Length: 158
Image (cartoon, rainbow, N blue to C red):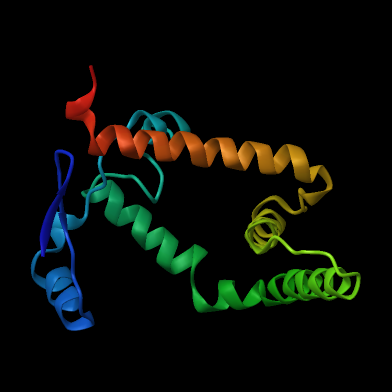
């Protein structure tokens, strides 16, 4: 099914077989992300794994990511961190529920994932500064969403 979100054509694929076929035969059409100032500034002029344009640089980045960052051995080496942070999250839910407190699962999942990522890549958690860090993450998310709406509806700007 084809739709338009503002000026942006969007294709909806409703089955795994169709998605597999599209990625095999039409991969180059769908491989690039839209350009936006958010990615340009925050992600070093599209030089990261997420927003790099398809080409030789993208292929090299993908190779590095697959062979080094996301290899089975590397992912398994972080298992203890993932298990510790998951256990802490479960403990927080148990503690809150036994006290009759509500648990904001969105915040809990965000901080758990954030703690895992920060421990793996930065060597420490940032949940000590939870309020400040959450505020920064929410602001990044808000700015990204605003950029995406700007891309989708750029023809509507006054």
